[in-house]
Length: 580
Image (cartoon, rainbow, N blue to C red; front, side, top):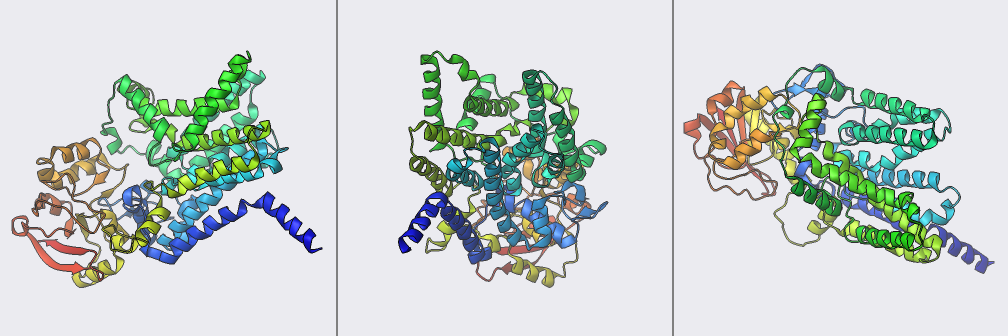
């Protein structure tokens, strides 16, 4: 009897062994981030300096659901310029404290990516699902743990879910799937994925209609349902894009202008290495396996005189799709093509249609999945060998210090055993320090700016800012703020180009260094002179300057120093100035 029980346990472990590494990693992730709490090391770039501060600002002002109101940064802009409340990711921040919501977003992204992949694989291979189950879960797990752009992690992770729902609709498996598709934008984002999904769907409709020799009516209906879902969930974005007559900074952004050869090189690079917002970490394991398999499989087709199969192989289609997305990325910087698109479709001026590359991580792991199940079916690779391969891919994802690999950053920094220069979450926002500052100066909502630190720090701490970081705001305000920083821009050409040709970071600039904005404990500044037009600052309503650099020309600017404040752990000193 005991032997029978042991045998059953052995069989169960053989079938479901993958649950242990998956569950273990999720528990490890939760344990690290909740264990270290706000002493965790979270990526700053396009994260703590952007979305986390915006979500906290919406929480501070109670503006998640409000309409017709301005939020206190960039001199006061419409709430509609910030993330929609009809988003599962945004809802986390409505319900939980900002740090907790961020961690839940990471864990939710892992689970969403894994189960989305599992749903799609089971739909495509229902008869072989039990056989492929370990491979399905582990490849889905590898995809789910990729360290995508955190604010849109759900959008990346849910791509296979969208494909799954569309297949259900195409196969006409019930009208309820249209409702599921309508709700899909709750976990997606139009500018990053939605507009491309709709474009890919149009291509699929044309191709399937030609192949089947009848119009793909179900997919045409799906196209309109999905579009309607995006309009409803992101009604603020559509209102700003289509109904507002305000001229935005998108109209003056200057993009790189590459030759066709340079664009091709850029396409090859992003195909091979990806980009940090959508880092598939595929170069070390997934890409070499795909290239070897691609060469061997297609040579076999040729040797067996089965060349037609080259054009019907789904794996080849996935590889072609990867190349297509990468080529579009490169061609975006080829000015003649970009200008043509913006001329034909004026609302797309400044819109980055090279975000097709955001779909490549999903495609790389689809390609790996196809290879593993084919090798297993052919008997060339045993199941345990396939599992070892995917486990290697998983380890590469976990142990590669990509920009948004917060788990790696937290563990490595906490285990160093000595003080490091980098800020953790708590030190970056310094909530206790700014509470003390606001109390001492009697802060009451006056417009302020940051120098030597990201304005997001002030926004997070409920301080109204004239500066800020946003990729979509009034061109007029950009020009008004430029008057404040003109003395600095005139001295540093790189800063002038950065602001005039882009302008999303509305910051105070140094007149001697390309940047003094620091996300670390050390601030490097060769000159303590603050190069601003003080009159322009006051004309825009500015009162306070919160600086990490002690300003040497306060009398010249008509500033009075109110105090110097230092964090309890000594990680940050802030000099506070008031304009007279």
